[in-house]
Length: 221
Image (cartoon, rainbow, N blue to C red):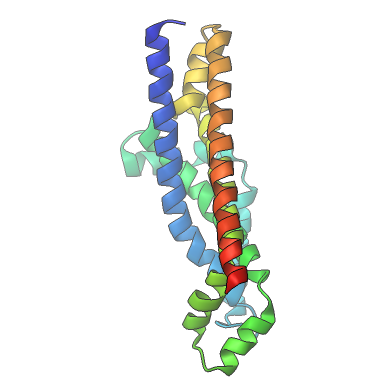
């Protein structure tokens, strides 16, 4: 394998990490609060707004049910409006972020709903406000589950980032298609697959380790 190809693989790896990091960060910052709202806005919950809860839930479900590759193509005009282009790593961040938001929202909702309702009632009895319950009870108790949720999000984004290479999104997926498939270079495709597997393993191991640490701290308290 030539030095030029190795440099391209290294650059594509950096692009993939960049896309995953930015899309994951923005998607989590938007999807996280949506997930908290979905978990706390049902009838009789902390912020009762069942009608809005159902509407937001429908939007989240509709976005999640759209196949990612179709989403990428469908929002090309929006992507071009935001970034000025529909190809490359900058453009790929847009559909990656949009796909991340509902994914994170549902995972955060599930993590919060696993919290024992008795803790919420105890906090209410002690005079805690709804916002205090969210930050000091729900989010604190859900840290291990939230960590695993964000880990799952990052792993999924790595797969999505490879998929977006099919439409010129840059990164490892784009490199694998252009060189490994279109130029009949199976060694490049193999290296791309190995790098993606390594990235997934690193992210998963780091997330599992962090979740275990949070779980131990929660048990001590």
